[in-house]
Amino acid sequence: MLDPTIKLFEFLEALPDAVIIVDASGRIAHLNAGVTRLLGHTRDTLEGHHLSALIPPRLRDAHAAHFRQFVTQPHESRLMTERPILFALARGGLEVPVSVTLAPLELNGERCTIAVMRDEARLHRHLGEAVSRAETDPLTGLWNRRAALEHLERLVTRKEPFALLFLDLVGFKQFNDQHGHHVGDEVLSAVAGRIRSSVRTPDAAARFGGDEFLVVMAGMRDAALLRVRAQAMAERIVQPMHVRTVSRGPNVTIGAALFPDQGATVEALLQGADQAMYLAKRAGLGFCLLGESPQRFPVSES
Image (cartoon, rainbow, N blue to C red; front, side):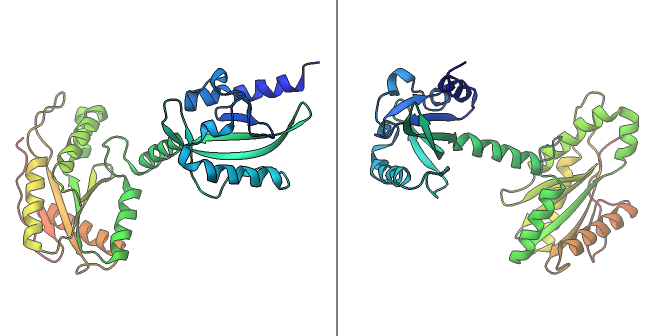
Protein backbone atom coordinates (compact mmCIF):
# COMPACT_ATOMS: atom_id res chain seq x y z
CA MET A 1 0.00 0.00 0.00
CA LEU A 2 1.23 3.47 -0.88
CA ASP A 3 2.44 5.54 2.06
CA PRO A 4 -0.33 8.07 2.98
CA THR A 5 2.36 10.75 3.23
CA ILE A 6 3.35 10.14 -0.38
CA LYS A 7 -0.31 10.36 -1.42
CA LEU A 8 -0.59 13.68 0.42
CA PHE A 9 2.51 15.09 -1.25
CA GLU A 10 1.27 13.99 -4.69
CA PHE A 11 -2.03 15.72 -4.00
CA LEU A 12 -0.30 18.92 -2.92
CA GLU A 13 1.74 18.93 -6.13
CA ALA A 14 -1.48 18.96 -8.15
CA LEU A 15 -2.82 22.06 -6.40
CA PRO A 16 -2.54 25.43 -8.20
CA ASP A 17 -1.92 27.30 -4.93
CA ALA A 18 1.33 27.47 -2.96
CA VAL A 19 1.34 25.05 -0.01
CA ILE A 20 3.86 24.63 2.79
CA ILE A 21 3.88 22.27 5.77
CA VAL A 22 5.39 23.68 8.97
CA ASP A 23 6.39 21.58 12.00
CA ALA A 24 5.67 22.45 15.61
CA SER A 25 8.90 24.46 15.89
CA GLY A 26 7.97 26.65 12.93
CA ARG A 27 10.35 25.03 10.44
CA ILE A 28 9.32 24.22 6.87
CA ALA A 29 8.96 20.46 6.46
CA HIS A 30 7.61 20.39 2.91
CA LEU A 31 6.53 22.69 0.09
CA ASN A 32 4.84 22.04 -3.23
CA ALA A 33 5.66 23.30 -6.73
CA GLY A 34 3.13 26.12 -6.28
CA VAL A 35 5.56 27.81 -3.88
CA THR A 36 8.18 27.87 -6.61
CA ARG A 37 5.70 29.26 -9.14
CA LEU A 38 4.50 31.97 -6.78
CA LEU A 39 7.65 32.93 -4.88
CA GLY A 40 10.57 31.44 -6.80
CA HIS A 41 11.85 29.41 -3.84
CA THR A 42 12.72 25.72 -4.24
CA ARG A 43 12.74 22.86 -1.76
CA ASP A 44 16.53 23.07 -1.48
CA THR A 45 16.38 26.72 -0.43
CA LEU A 46 13.47 26.44 2.02
CA GLU A 47 12.99 22.99 3.55
CA GLY A 48 14.45 22.91 7.06
CA HIS A 49 14.48 26.68 7.33
CA HIS A 50 12.26 28.63 9.68
CA LEU A 51 8.99 29.95 8.32
CA SER A 52 10.21 33.50 8.95
CA ALA A 53 12.31 33.13 5.77
CA LEU A 54 9.06 33.76 3.87
CA ILE A 55 8.01 36.78 5.94
CA PRO A 56 9.17 40.36 5.22
CA PRO A 57 11.31 41.52 8.17
CA ARG A 58 8.88 44.34 9.04
CA LEU A 59 6.04 41.81 9.49
CA ARG A 60 7.84 38.98 11.31
CA ASP A 61 6.83 39.91 14.86
CA ALA A 62 3.14 40.20 13.96
CA HIS A 63 3.29 36.99 11.95
CA ALA A 64 4.93 35.09 14.81
CA ALA A 65 2.15 36.21 17.16
CA HIS A 66 -0.57 35.04 14.77
CA PHE A 67 1.15 31.72 14.22
CA ARG A 68 1.60 31.10 17.96
CA GLN A 69 -2.05 31.89 18.53
CA PHE A 70 -3.05 29.34 15.92
CA VAL A 71 -0.88 26.48 17.20
CA THR A 72 -1.79 27.02 20.87
CA GLN A 73 -5.55 27.19 20.34
CA PRO A 74 -7.84 24.26 19.42
CA HIS A 75 -6.96 23.48 15.84
CA GLU A 76 -9.42 24.32 13.10
CA SER A 77 -8.94 25.45 9.53
CA ARG A 78 -9.20 29.21 9.12
CA LEU A 79 -7.72 32.29 7.52
CA MET A 80 -4.53 33.34 9.20
CA THR A 81 -5.87 36.86 9.92
CA GLU A 82 -8.95 38.89 9.18
CA ARG A 83 -6.86 41.15 6.99
CA PRO A 84 -7.70 40.53 3.34
CA ILE A 85 -4.07 40.50 2.18
CA LEU A 86 -0.77 39.47 3.75
CA PHE A 87 2.67 39.56 2.16
CA ALA A 88 5.11 36.74 1.46
CA LEU A 89 8.78 37.26 0.67
CA ALA A 90 9.70 35.99 -2.78
CA ARG A 91 13.15 35.05 -3.94
CA GLY A 92 15.06 38.27 -4.61
CA GLY A 93 13.24 40.20 -1.89
CA LEU A 94 10.01 41.01 -3.73
CA GLU A 95 6.91 41.15 -1.51
CA VAL A 96 3.98 39.23 -2.99
CA PRO A 97 0.39 39.86 -1.77
CA VAL A 98 -1.21 36.60 -0.61
CA SER A 99 -4.06 35.26 1.48
CA VAL A 100 -3.13 32.43 3.85
CA THR A 101 -5.36 29.64 5.15
CA LEU A 102 -4.04 27.48 8.00
CA ALA A 103 -5.13 23.96 8.89
CA PRO A 104 -3.90 21.37 11.43
CA LEU A 105 -2.12 18.29 10.12
CA GLU A 106 -0.58 15.23 11.70
CA LEU A 107 2.44 14.06 9.71
CA ASN A 108 4.36 10.95 10.73
CA GLY A 109 2.94 11.26 14.23
CA GLU A 110 3.98 14.89 14.60
CA ARG A 111 1.58 17.79 14.93
CA CYS A 112 2.12 20.17 11.99
CA THR A 113 0.41 23.07 10.29
CA ILE A 114 -0.39 23.24 6.60
CA ALA A 115 -0.53 26.73 5.07
CA VAL A 116 -2.14 27.42 1.71
CA MET A 117 -1.09 30.69 0.05
CA ARG A 118 -3.19 32.17 -2.71
CA ASP A 119 -1.81 34.76 -5.13
CA GLU A 120 -4.02 37.77 -4.45
CA ALA A 121 -2.48 39.90 -7.19
CA ARG A 122 -3.38 37.32 -9.80
CA LEU A 123 -6.85 36.88 -8.35
CA HIS A 124 -7.52 40.63 -8.36
CA ARG A 125 -6.17 40.88 -11.90
CA HIS A 126 -8.52 38.15 -13.09
CA LEU A 127 -11.41 39.75 -11.22
CA GLY A 128 -10.60 43.07 -12.85
CA GLU A 129 -10.60 41.42 -16.27
CA ALA A 130 -13.92 39.75 -15.52
CA VAL A 131 -15.46 43.05 -14.41
CA SER A 132 -14.10 44.72 -17.52
CA ARG A 133 -15.66 42.05 -19.73
CA ALA A 134 -18.96 42.40 -17.87
CA GLU A 135 -19.00 46.17 -18.47
CA THR A 136 -17.57 46.34 -22.00
CA ASP A 137 -19.16 45.83 -25.38
CA PRO A 138 -16.95 43.18 -27.04
CA LEU A 139 -17.21 44.67 -30.54
CA THR A 140 -16.46 48.33 -29.86
CA GLY A 141 -14.67 48.34 -26.51
CA LEU A 142 -17.08 50.99 -25.23
CA TRP A 143 -19.22 50.46 -22.15
CA ASN A 144 -22.19 48.20 -22.72
CA ARG A 145 -25.83 49.05 -21.92
CA ARG A 146 -25.62 47.72 -18.37
CA ALA A 147 -22.52 49.73 -17.47
CA ALA A 148 -24.02 52.89 -18.98
CA LEU A 149 -27.24 52.56 -16.99
CA GLU A 150 -25.33 51.97 -13.74
CA HIS A 151 -23.21 55.06 -14.45
CA LEU A 152 -26.32 57.15 -15.07
CA GLU A 153 -27.89 55.93 -11.83
CA ARG A 154 -24.77 56.98 -9.91
CA LEU A 155 -24.81 60.47 -11.44
CA VAL A 156 -28.51 60.92 -10.73
CA THR A 157 -28.07 59.72 -7.14
CA ARG A 158 -25.24 62.22 -6.63
CA LYS A 159 -27.34 64.92 -8.33
CA GLU A 160 -24.45 65.85 -10.61
CA PRO A 161 -25.51 67.75 -13.76
CA PHE A 162 -24.82 66.13 -17.12
CA ALA A 163 -26.06 65.91 -20.69
CA LEU A 164 -27.31 62.62 -22.10
CA LEU A 165 -26.85 62.15 -25.85
CA PHE A 166 -28.56 59.38 -27.79
CA LEU A 167 -26.87 58.65 -31.15
CA ASP A 168 -28.42 56.62 -33.96
CA LEU A 169 -26.71 55.73 -37.24
CA VAL A 170 -29.11 56.59 -40.06
CA GLY A 171 -30.03 53.72 -42.40
CA PHE A 172 -27.60 51.28 -40.84
CA LYS A 173 -29.90 48.28 -41.24
CA GLN A 174 -29.99 48.79 -44.99
CA PHE A 175 -26.23 49.30 -44.94
CA ASN A 176 -25.78 45.93 -43.24
CA ASP A 177 -28.07 44.26 -45.75
CA GLN A 178 -26.09 45.76 -48.63
CA HIS A 179 -22.51 45.23 -47.40
CA GLY A 180 -22.85 42.36 -44.93
CA HIS A 181 -22.65 42.22 -41.15
CA HIS A 182 -18.88 41.70 -41.12
CA VAL A 183 -18.40 45.08 -42.84
CA GLY A 184 -21.09 46.63 -40.63
CA ASP A 185 -19.26 45.46 -37.51
CA GLU A 186 -16.05 47.11 -38.69
CA VAL A 187 -17.93 50.35 -39.35
CA LEU A 188 -19.49 50.23 -35.88
CA SER A 189 -16.06 49.72 -34.37
CA ALA A 190 -14.69 52.67 -36.36
CA VAL A 191 -17.61 54.88 -35.28
CA ALA A 192 -16.99 53.89 -31.65
CA GLY A 193 -13.39 55.01 -32.03
CA ARG A 194 -14.52 58.38 -33.35
CA ILE A 195 -16.97 58.79 -30.48
CA ARG A 196 -14.27 57.83 -27.98
CA SER A 197 -11.92 60.45 -29.42
CA SER A 198 -14.67 63.08 -29.18
CA VAL A 199 -15.34 62.82 -25.45
CA ARG A 200 -13.35 64.27 -22.57
CA THR A 201 -11.88 62.24 -19.72
CA PRO A 202 -14.84 62.85 -17.34
CA ASP A 203 -17.35 61.87 -20.05
CA ALA A 204 -18.55 58.37 -20.83
CA ALA A 205 -19.52 56.57 -24.03
CA ALA A 206 -21.40 53.31 -24.53
CA ARG A 207 -22.83 51.14 -27.24
CA PHE A 208 -26.46 50.98 -26.16
CA GLY A 209 -27.45 48.30 -28.63
CA GLY A 210 -27.24 47.61 -32.36
CA ASP A 211 -26.32 50.87 -34.08
CA GLU A 212 -27.28 53.04 -31.10
CA PHE A 213 -24.71 54.78 -28.92
CA LEU A 214 -24.98 56.81 -25.76
CA VAL A 215 -22.72 59.61 -24.55
CA VAL A 216 -22.77 61.23 -21.13
CA MET A 217 -21.19 64.69 -20.95
CA ALA A 218 -20.28 65.27 -17.33
CA GLY A 219 -21.04 68.66 -15.78
CA MET A 220 -22.83 69.92 -18.90
CA ARG A 221 -25.43 72.59 -18.10
CA ASP A 222 -25.19 74.97 -21.05
CA ALA A 223 -27.47 74.16 -24.02
CA ALA A 224 -25.42 76.27 -26.45
CA LEU A 225 -22.17 74.55 -25.48
CA LEU A 226 -23.90 71.18 -25.73
CA ARG A 227 -24.92 71.93 -29.33
CA VAL A 228 -21.35 72.92 -30.20
CA ARG A 229 -19.88 69.75 -28.77
CA ALA A 230 -22.57 67.52 -30.27
CA GLN A 231 -21.94 69.08 -33.70
CA ALA A 232 -18.20 68.51 -33.38
CA MET A 233 -18.88 64.85 -32.55
CA ALA A 234 -21.24 64.47 -35.50
CA GLU A 235 -18.72 66.07 -37.88
CA ARG A 236 -16.10 63.58 -36.78
CA ILE A 237 -18.43 60.57 -37.13
CA VAL A 238 -19.49 61.39 -40.71
CA GLN A 239 -15.95 61.89 -42.03
CA PRO A 240 -15.02 59.48 -44.85
CA MET A 241 -13.72 56.13 -43.68
CA HIS A 242 -12.12 53.27 -45.55
CA VAL A 243 -13.48 49.91 -44.41
CA ARG A 244 -13.24 47.23 -47.10
CA THR A 245 -15.81 48.30 -49.72
CA VAL A 246 -16.93 51.36 -47.76
CA SER A 247 -15.38 54.77 -48.28
CA ARG A 248 -17.92 57.11 -46.68
CA GLY A 249 -18.81 57.75 -43.07
CA PRO A 250 -22.30 56.97 -41.80
CA ASN A 251 -24.90 59.62 -41.15
CA VAL A 252 -25.86 60.13 -37.52
CA THR A 253 -28.80 61.63 -35.66
CA ILE A 254 -28.38 62.85 -32.08
CA GLY A 255 -31.03 63.53 -29.46
CA ALA A 256 -30.11 65.08 -26.11
CA ALA A 257 -31.55 65.83 -22.68
CA LEU A 258 -30.10 67.72 -19.70
CA PHE A 259 -30.12 66.54 -16.10
CA PRO A 260 -31.75 67.67 -13.90
CA ASP A 261 -33.72 70.26 -15.89
CA GLN A 262 -35.22 67.83 -18.43
CA GLY A 263 -35.59 64.70 -16.35
CA ALA A 264 -35.07 63.72 -12.74
CA THR A 265 -34.66 59.98 -13.34
CA VAL A 266 -32.60 57.83 -15.69
CA GLU A 267 -35.77 56.54 -17.35
CA ALA A 268 -37.09 60.05 -17.97
CA LEU A 269 -33.76 61.19 -19.43
CA LEU A 270 -33.49 58.19 -21.74
CA GLN A 271 -37.05 58.73 -22.95
CA GLY A 272 -36.39 62.44 -23.44
CA ALA A 273 -33.17 61.93 -25.41
CA ASP A 274 -34.82 59.20 -27.50
CA GLN A 275 -37.80 61.45 -28.21
CA ALA A 276 -35.51 64.31 -29.25
CA MET A 277 -33.55 61.96 -31.52
CA TYR A 278 -36.79 60.78 -33.14
CA LEU A 279 -37.87 64.38 -33.78
CA ALA A 280 -34.52 65.16 -35.42
CA LYS A 281 -34.71 62.03 -37.57
CA ARG A 282 -38.30 62.72 -38.63
CA ALA A 283 -37.27 66.25 -39.63
CA GLY A 284 -34.32 64.90 -41.61
CA LEU A 285 -31.94 66.91 -39.41
CA GLY A 286 -28.97 65.93 -37.31
CA PHE A 287 -29.63 67.12 -33.76
CA CYS A 288 -32.37 67.98 -31.32
CA LEU A 289 -32.22 69.01 -27.67
CA LEU A 290 -35.39 68.05 -25.84
CA GLY A 291 -37.84 70.95 -25.84
CA GLU A 292 -36.16 72.77 -28.76
CA SER A 293 -36.49 72.62 -32.53
CA PRO A 294 -34.25 70.18 -34.43
CA GLN A 295 -31.25 71.67 -36.20
CA ARG A 296 -29.20 70.58 -39.15
CA PHE A 297 -25.83 68.93 -38.73
CA PRO A 298 -23.39 67.89 -41.44
CA VAL A 299 -24.21 64.66 -43.23
CA SER A 300 -21.93 62.22 -44.94
CA GLU A 301 -21.39 62.51 -48.67
CA SER A 302 -22.84 59.60 -50.61
